[in-house]
Image (cartoon, rainbow, N blue to C red; front, side, top):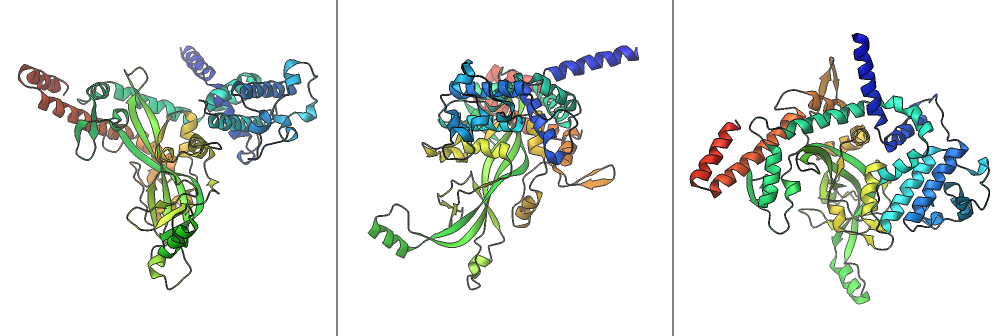
Length: 480
């Protein structure tokens, strides 16, 4: 009997691993092949045949989106010469078979280099207004190198991020069924059909109006963390009448601002976990929502006489959205403006580049409005890995020390096996695997869902009378 059970479990594990997307295997391979991760005992380089197959796919991708490989694949912003990008794609003659394939020393056998090519293609395709999925393009690359990626499949079997994503899916399944008098699926569908939106401040349902978004406001959401993704230097500006007068004489386009001090700018996301309807609109799925903000330091000056500046230099203030480089924005509640430089240091390329690429193009420049709005990413093993890495901890501590508080349902510190830890992953795991309804991740999502369901029922009861009202009260009683 034990033997049969073990065999069955092994079959299930094998089937699950075989269903993993090639893009997931590629991301895993990149992590294991990173020099800092230690020595990888398996194969590290692609074969000549694999490299050629990958380059063929990359060249086909460029053609698909009408891109010139020598430009799209150039690692610098300036147009690349054919020689600078020669190892990243195949020529027309090589693609058609007219010319013999190049020698081994003229091929790039490193997986990371070809993945970078895909990232550059995605960026160029989006600038050309194409809808492109980075993960889908990685899947195409992975389909050409199955033998190389196979060696990394077993590593995924022990990846804690896979377990984490699966257990978060269990929370979504749990919320999909009625419990504790809460029917979240019914609430979301009825609120949408009736054009109602939940107001978290009043705890009541309201008409969404012309600009409402029921899918966003009605979905239960809990705050998790602040994730710093980039930083840049900046300048504090104040309006100066003399500068403005000079500007009018010269008919310059920029307003009459004068630089008074330098500033430090942190680009960050407020990360939430949100429960909303899946594509079938019959069940719940969880996503991570990322809302962009910029943290700006108080004016920093060496002038000891400027007490009003020096007193504020240790404080940070939050501005909604990412600052557009070179465009001044007023700090809330102040007459001071801040202008961020365009030289941004990335601290999390996977999250930073996605927002940057979607709202900037060489042709049209910045989409100012787009830099205000957040977006959602699915709960996948890779996204769990990215979000729960304890990167930039010292930068977060600096923000907390200088006036910024983190809105989060996670405890500041947890005790595991008698050892205290403030690791982000440990704190998240504690909230996920905690069974207390008040402090657990699932319990707090249910509490938010309960507030919304109660608000909808109260709104509906106010809108009906007679038998219909008694029916609704009876059904609410039956739900518990």
